[in-house]
Length: 220
Ligand SMILES: *[C@@H]1O[C@H](CO)[C@@H](O)[C@H](O)[C@H]1NC(C)=O
Ligand SMILES: *[C@@H]1O[C@H](CO)[C@@H](O)[C@H](O)[C@H]1NC(C)=O
Ligand SMILES: *[C@@H]1O[C@H](CO)[C@@H](O)[C@H](O)[C@H]1NC(C)=O
Image 1 (cartoon, helix red, strand yellow):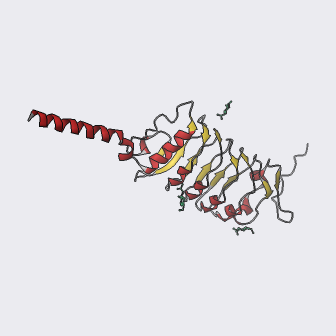
Image 2 (tube, rainbow, N blue to C red):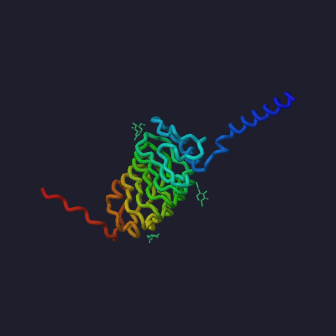
Image 3 (tube, rainbow, N blue to C red):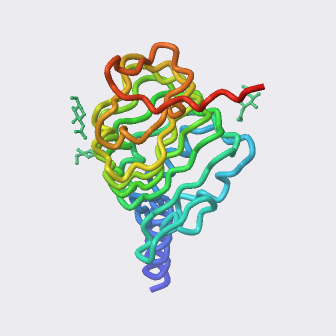
């Protein structure tokens, strides 16, 4: 009898160990996994991501993360956080994300095409980093976007025409990059002044398009 009990309790112990070892997959949450994939790609000398513990039920208690009432992530706020490293395409899985604020860091690499999957995004602020490569055409899918600030990076290529179809766009800043070609002037871009595009030496306004008048010089 004792042997049976002891056999039973050791198998229970074994089962317990197996469950604990698999905690992250048992309790894992797709959005938490996506954010944890981001954490793993970032260097975080100030430990701002210390609370990002993938074994928790969801990421809603993590610092710099906000969720809606259904425990789905709506905001990631990591501006001026001293982060370096790269963005990850898993961010595209945060289907309810509205605010992605990662300005003022030292983030390198490209803007993943998968950011174009975040169709609830209202604000995409990646300015003041060291991002290179093109502005993904897929960002034109972000039809609720109001703020798009990608200024002060090392972005190259042309400005995708797809962005002109975002009718909600209120603030656009792609200044201080290495963009080239013509600035689109139709659609939502009709309202943006040259300031949004400044300091891109190879970027031109199309010759026959109206350009907002420069402010009159102050007389001395
Ligand atoms: C970026 O990294 C450099 C050193 O590589 C550091 O001097 C600078 O302060 C960092 N900038 C930000 C915004 O963290
Ligand atoms: C983005 O959406 C496409 C099409 O719905 C899908 O195939 C792809 O896996 C998504 N990417 C991410 C990173 O969620
Ligand atoms: C602006 O013009 C480009 C090129 O002709 C086109 O692809 C794009 O769809 C236009 N945007 C809008 C909002 O009509």
